[in-house]
Image (cartoon, rainbow, N blue to C red; front, side, top):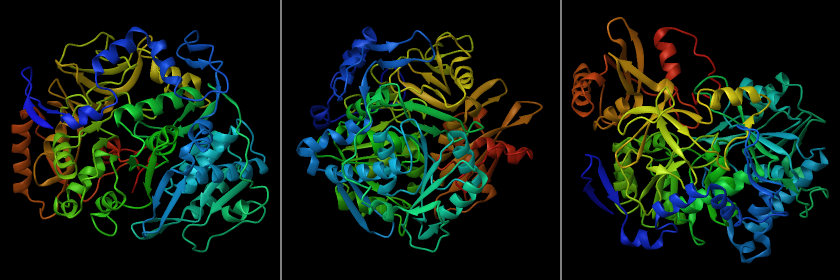
Length: 633
């Protein structure tokens, strides 16, 4: 890739190499995007044709009851049929679907045929426990293959899975079980993280005490430590899978395209968790199309989405989309730095990973250890990199590009949400990149940046990020609360989906996501995104991670208060604080200089890696912290 400067602004451009261009599935983004906007329904119908259907749809988009949009109305399908059933009838039956490595170094592989058999067996186990089409099943597990098997088994028999990340507290798990009214809970004795056992069964037991709706608990044995098993309620996974009822033949439930597939509770950075509902048809079309085009996935690729299946990134791009495409997916159980900071890079080398997709938080965390660790490993198999979860600051982008990608791997910096189902604003390998920008909308996605009046703002101005037309992967409602769905996402502007993020669009149409609307600080009448201040701090060689909040001030309205985690070899001092303030003054401007910088060892984050700035603000002001069930620590 080459590096030059655009004549219209001072942002650096990175252009794809000829090799990347030749291999790109989508070579002319502009033409494809125009076609998708000219004929939205025809465009999505064309993508839906790549899936298998028991019965083809009658109507592509039903907008008669907006904002409760329906896609591929009348179509009959099942996402498990597309992810597994159809592959076992082709050469892919013996292809690797999943490569898994445990934190201790143990390995397992699953061909599409074997994964299909395991999903069938567990589907039959669930049916034997009375689980039927439309029933909800809560899954509370670590990063093990059985989590994927449980999810797909639910889909296959028409049950609705609700995956709760295997690190939530007892009350958080109980609340989600209660909201979904799940009679069956799937968990495990424990999982491995940083060499320690996370006692999932103990948390599950307490959660079940608090939510009397659960009748059966299925427990996968991973760590082997002693756990309490209650008679007539708790059953070992391996015992059930050894029974005659666990046949390798399981009939796939024929589902309507609009039948529920899963509920996923959002991470809670903006308050009380809410159950986002996705469906079989549109979600399958959208996730598979976005993954194929954005990461140029080929039949011989090994794709690693280094997220957790318990989050939407894992649902879409570990579990479902790779399997629909027939790709080999890699999953790792444990921490990225265990036992040493080169664990990820060691696995990229060993398994020959071609495409890697992770979060800026993880990238910055690994940056702290410098370039020596990754430089010890052969990372030449990588041809594309990806970023997800929050805006990636240019400093981390360049480290990722130069050190991990060796200057040859384009970075697909994707913006999307639990609610959207898949990538919304994203590059494709054939387009020019600007570090820190999510680039432009995916074909078929109509986004804009508007002011408080709902009208588009000028290029370079901050505004609210909105989606102007429906898309197949969109959430259908908030589970059990349709009014909340209407009010939160569609209540501010008529017929515009409010993403909840602030952004700006530059002269080239590239979109820069600043952060959550509540992560914008107004200082002396100027609006500053926390991401801008944080990016400026992280661009200093002493800083690994940063968080910024606004605190009330009589004179300025708000002042900026910043928190910094230092890279190894740097120590907190008044001199370093002054140096960082001067650095911000130079990098961002005088208005962005923090009134105070506090040096800390860690920051409050959700388990998906997002910094919970509202918790920092509440602590600084001595106020209640609100819902902290999703905190990592």
